Length: 85
Image (tube, rainbow, N blue to C red; front, top):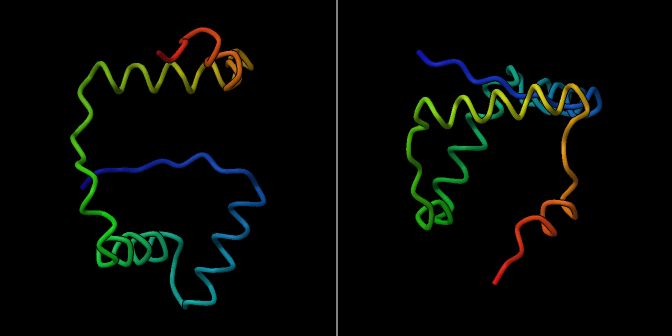
């Protein structure tokens, strides 16, 4: 078993809970149902997913720490820093 953690706003959590309750299940069941529907839609065929390595996980953890500390960049700042060609 693997663990997935999602950080969502209080409002998003409330919406997840409402939708899950309407379906008669848990938030986990709702998310798994959505993933199944997405795979069956045919749109998922365009994407390939690979497992994250240790470096990727460290980067994500660092980003989470920076975000929680308020040390994150806006999309506009990132666009300026990493100019597209």
